[in-house]
Image (cartoon, rainbow, N blue to C red):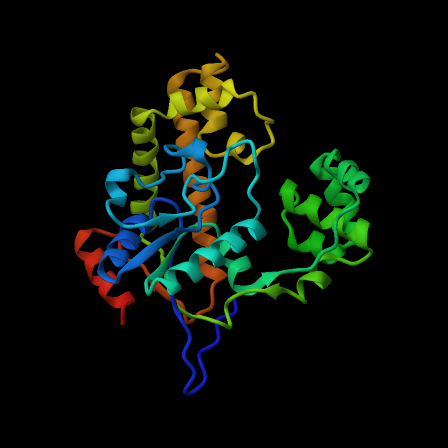
Length: 314
């Protein structure tokens, strides 16, 4: 993620970024910083963009938001699929509006692809031929990965064989364009990393503390109405491949609603899925952001939140 230091005498608008795995304390810190620095909180979490997932995405409640403006939270209907380029365009507009109002944009979220797309831009990959896309997406992931080993060996070596989405994307790009995805990604455009002064902080609290928070959070979601949220989604008869239908908690609770599993098993599956997701995010945020980005490795409490909010303003 490209965020070069300003040249001597150069002034760039500031953007704060608070990122890390789910349940790490990002939202509380973002709100504290926004209150202290006349900020506006801008969502960078792929699930929290959907109106249908207020509870299962752990979107901040109106009480938690208080009088701090929050943007790009729950603004997309679940019948749509939000893409990283769409989110990045919306985030750029919100950042510009915040700067225009003399306020600090505070990006907060755990979707690394969104953050990378905003900062680095997107690869100008041409539109994929619909027939090629349909053919590739219909392949079992094992067959798609086997084909990728022949047609784009470098991508096949880089991607996990069971990563359905990324394997299919790499295969459809090389088949439709004749060039591997990596070749397109070397010519990204539209990122804002060169135009801002980024103030980043990655939250990487102790893993045991984080896993306990994940378990507790899913139980709280069940108490707060997660079942009703999934029932409302099922009543809409949305396509099962849409992001809202695959969000953590939705398949697990749906299984119980449909009578395929017991409630305690559904809850444990939801907790397990949350922990697994947090572990993947933890690994990504440990390794992908530049070494110069601040990592906070303590568990987050009210005292530390105030301390970090001050640090992010310096």
